[in-house]
Length: 148
Image (cartoon, rainbow, N blue to C red):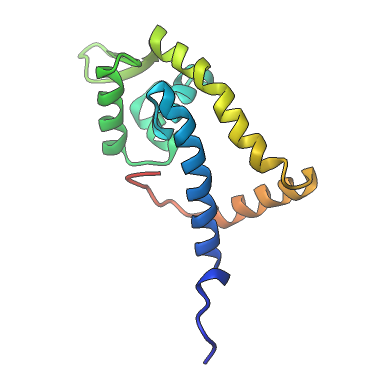
């Protein structure tokens, strides 16, 4: 039987790097009163045109209830607005408010700085390979997360 070596496990290494990157990012965007998930919502709605709560849940990779809680919090803080989208008002669309747009722009330099910090540590071809490998590892995994 071989010895279990935690630090040699893929899950440990991916989780550790993820937490390092998250911690760095969260420390920077907290200055704008944002979390990573709030940033994801603002980007999805404001930059990529993802406007329904269900589509946002899929876009971010979290559950629909987690998305609803996040949207309620962001609406209470004035970052987004939720509006009825059909005749009976049950459907919802999400839009970024002027405050949300300002926060999106204010946080962008921090987002780019964290991305650049890590992506410039490796050559462009290594980055492309890493992205491809991560995509293959995630392919076919439909796990919905409560938190990302």
